Image (cartoon, rainbow, N blue to C red):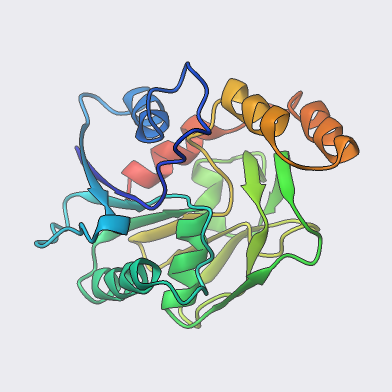
Amino acid sequence: MRINILVCDWFEGLLPDFVPSFPHLFYRLFDAVSPHPSYRLFDVQKGEFPQVLNREELYIVAGSRAGAYEDIPWVKAVLEFIRRGYNENIKMAGICFGHQAVAQALGGKVEPSPGGWGAGARRSRIVHPKALRFFPDGELCLYYNHNDQAVTLPPMAEQVATSDFCENEAFIIGDNILCFQGHPEYSKEYMAHVLETAKAPQNIKEKGMESLKEKAMNEATAKWMISL
């Protein structure tokens, strides 16, 4: 399967030695659940976008330190790509910033979280029957690292998962667009690195580290994305 990754941030200088580049987190995730996937990267901050869209391939809008509501040329270009992808019915997944960008592009609203920084492992409640195929216990647990939230979903979207911290943890649009506020590509080791190196109050970092006792449902999330 071809997986196209729209790289919205390379996180230069922030990655640990055991992560060669940010896209390698996605390689590790999908290599574990899909036979012989192939990858193509698009550096959207440099204006690189897929020119021809293929409905048999998956397009992932990845994470970023930028906000989906920011007046930045490349962010606006990502929103325009999402609208194009929606109109052409491609298989598309949004992760963290990508989740928020899909919401923002298609008529929802993104804003800073009233609860502040959400980091570490977090459980949410499954509220859509389609998700039970992949999360039969009715819960979703992923690693998180975000300050913004999609507070309003697009009118055509259906909520998939919700929590007290973040109302819209995941959503779907039709049968071909799937978005998660969490990071299924994060490993436990990488999430620990993010917490250890973050400029945040010690009590928040300690709470995040304590949460890593939870097991993230990364592979189930990846299986859903590649089944679109």
